[in-house]
Image (cartoon, rainbow, N blue to C red; front, side, top):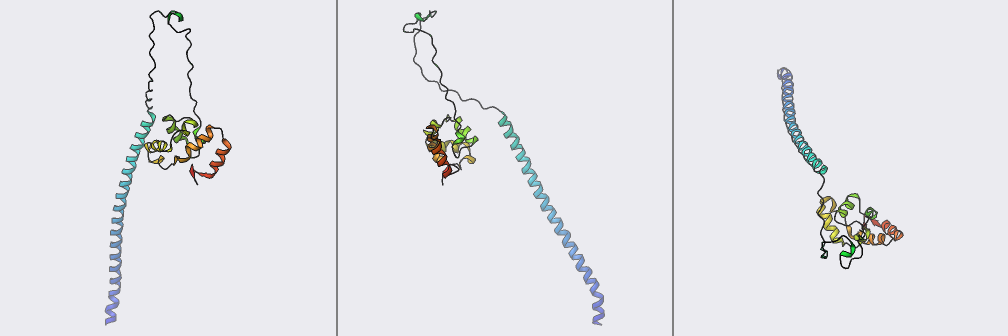
Length: 189
């Protein structure tokens, strides 16, 4: 009798177990899809925000930067008579020859181990365009320039750059090459 009652309840028990497992699976799927959809919405919002940031950066990059005003140097004032038709009309002046303007040609600072195109541009913008100028610039000043440029430049160590620039300015290319082979990205190994 017990066996007969048990044999009739087994199919019902299996059916109940399958029904409970099906309901549990459906609830799990439903909760998982809601969580996944929430994450997808969050990522899509982040993507949209980054696209707006990118567009702003592109617009700012396309705008030319205003040139920095040149610093005016005080020159001595010469009183000139109103009649300047000839050089003799100005006392003490024998001719009107203009003085040559010396333009300092920029060196390729990328030769210095640790300086790439972006850092070279930063240094040029600060008036450091030649090996001689870089050699006379203290590493602390170069560090200030890099820190002002943002976090991606703060990892660079300009400690050896002035010394390398001194060798380059003096034309000691072999010594510079040997030293650079010992350096690791511009730092003493």
